[in-house]
Length: 245
Ligand code: SF4
Image 1 (cartoon, rainbow, N blue to C red):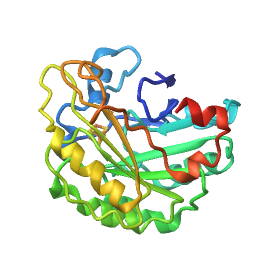
Image 2 (cartoon, helix red, strand yellow; image 1 turned 120 degrees about the horizontal axis):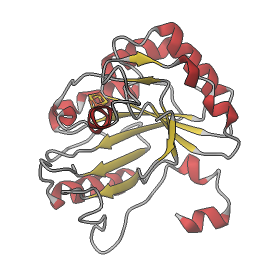
Image 3 (spheres, rainbow, N blue to C red; image 1 turned 90 degrees about the vertical axis):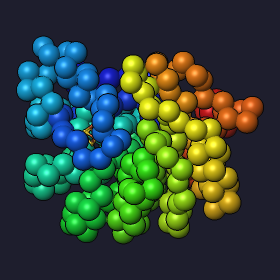
């Protein structure tokens, strides 16, 4: 699984210059990345152990078609074992590929805010943190310190109601958990986040309700899908592409 097209609704493809991770909070309980390493042992001989893949570092330079790229879907870019020198090289590649938007998502918000001042943040790098319950809303405070053009939240798997301070946040994604042992989501939790986004003029994207499979319960909320993207991204699109969203 060097790079893949992905079924994730808010991105086009994935890039994994590292793989492997370990669990840090309840959102990790049924980590799909860990499950994939278990299922495809041949592709992941190190299993879910944090592993650097130098051979993948330059991949985005070879992808000519402008894409939204989810960085490290199989790991966490701010993992404790990620060396600063390798992280700097990853940021160099992203800066050198302005044709792409790079979407980085972490649960390690403390390490993000420690390291962020030492990195250059080109406009095409969007930075997000996961917030699955109110207990982890403090990650947003760390994110706010980061000088990224787009700062976003992934509230997936959403495991409880959230009251969010959306100051300095440009985009919020919600989603329910999927799989055999998925934990339930309450429609009102999502509705409340949607309303908070509307109030704060923050783009809102509801990915899916989850269930035994990701698409099982669809993604409609109050009679429509919610596919908003940050304003900065909409500015990059042609009218035709905008109509297709
Ligand atoms: S931080 Fe992400 S990749 Fe790492 S264990 Fe948790 S869910 Fe999985």
